[in-house]
Length: 179
Image (tube, rainbow, N blue to C red; front, side):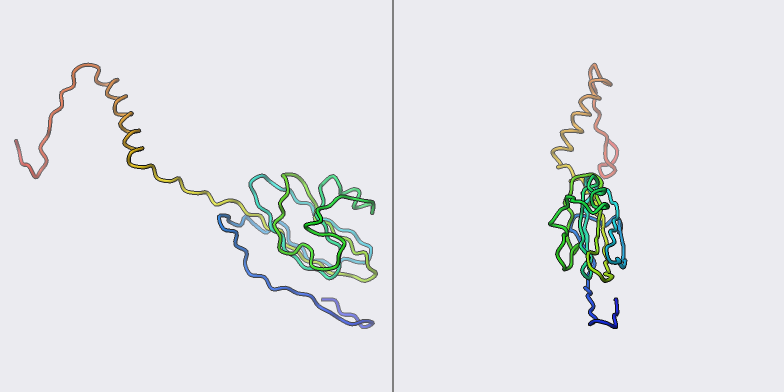
């Protein structure tokens, strides 16, 4: 919280509950940052999107312009030039950007980038979580599938082990007694 003597004070906060994405388990908090961004300062945080992993971002800030930008755009962002970004995940508007969204991006390198375009310090906080699919257990084979597979294996073994006449003897079970 930033307190000021020369102007009114305000605070922004949010309450979150633990995330749960059905069918996925959390790998980690991939990025986790809280910072005060001084006037005119640009900052960035690199991250890599991997295939098959889901990325969930949540954050809050007090007026910092927040962006998700492709890796190739970092130089343009750093120099203050025009750059491409994903408007669904941030932008120039005041408000809570980086707020509770799944980043649906192709595999590659990206940056969480922030710029304080005001004349006063601003704060920002965000967490980027990674999630992987939970391995689904293999469905048990049906009895018919098992019988067919084992029957084929038995037939194959019989052809190899018993090429001639096979004699089968029926042995008594303990309940039958000796024969």
